[in-house]
Amino acid sequence: MKTKQKSVRVFEIVSNNYEKVTNFIEKKGILLKRFLLVIKTDNKDIINYFQDKPYEVRFVKPDFDGSDEVIQIEDEEQSSSTTNVEVNTVDNADVGLQKTEIFDRIIRSGSEIRSTNKLVFLQKINAGAKVYSTQEIEIFAGVEGDVVCDGEYMIVKQAKENKIIFQNETLPAINKLSFISKHGIKELE
Image (cartoon, rainbow, N blue to C red):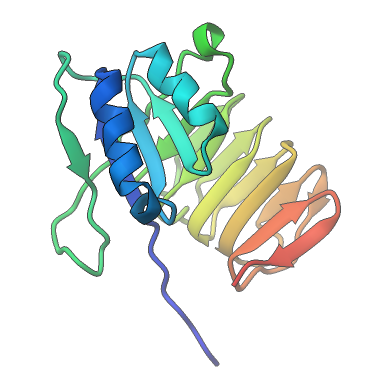
């Protein structure tokens, strides 16, 4: 048996200052391509700036008072401190983007999440938990609970057999990070 533990690397930028954000991206961009960028901003110019850029980006509603602070969420291997990304959504009616909810907590037994938004899970979905979305679901940890996805694709790190229903089809066990679409399952590792 061979196993690997992978961690999701997230870089969070909190700012409404277009010049500071774009200068930072221009200077550090090459280092950020391997990160999921979570950007907390109300500035539509910043949101538009990222539309043609080669980054994996998620925009969330800012919960700050206009600070220009930049915060890095450290990789688990580099830090023993815990960083939580609270569940956030984007008001996409204003910017024309799909809503995304990010969960950086274990989804415990008895929890039920029903959504019409894209869902991203950075931690495990325990047995007894239920997750349903009409959009895409990305799970970067293990799945023991029940997951139903009606979106265009899924990304799943690990799941037991008969725990995921994708577009009305029950999936087999998944043991490696995989991309799932109507064309089948493709391992990414």
